[in-house]
Length: 56
Length: 243
Image (cartoon, rainbow over all chains, first blue to last red; front, side, top):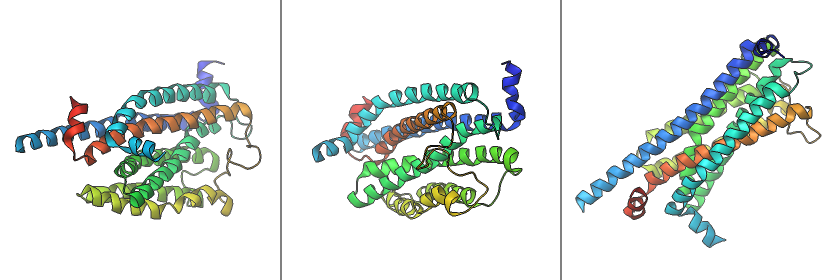
């Protein structure tokens, strides 16, 4: 099986590859979004900690 | 059992354990998804009716499965949070919503890309597609509701009620292809009789579904760690984990 045959997806390349691309993008964005959400929470917690130490 | 559960649900214990588990779930999900991509795109033969277009099933069905699975987890966590007032449960529910919304979007987008060559249309207002769209709006409504309430405890309770009301949509989506005779094809895997798909086509699909599920667990653990920090008021253990 040649590469061009594989890429053509039996004539359905215009539908198969975008479907895979959309899903892959969703997976990757999820990784970065989850990390960003965690880092934000960590930063907020650190700030709260400093505030309470200043107050105490 | 209760002692174990109490220890597990205690914020510092969960925070540390989840931190250790994330790479295990993440990397096993990665390996399974890559293997399933190879199996689905290369090893599986083309479908005798749909040709190579059927390969969209390997991203469409797992996304659709996750859109429902994540909602069920979110609703269960919401119920536990409301009944037993467990903060960790609310943290889980809040973390589910953006992940579930993204998988619902993927299911709808890949479904449109499958519908166009097979049905000749990107979209049709049939029962399966419409109820899946409502699922997306439920997730978005949940996220918007949380964002509109500043007090975390009140946001947790209000959004939990919304999640529980919306759970009626889950069986409607699942059985929509049975109850209404629609354009969407009936279930391929979850039939009482043998699945209507050959083994070489089925195995990559099952691997992909397991991979997506493990991927979801890894994402969930990362987000819940953050949500636990947001809900924590006793500074003692936070100072410890940050040191």
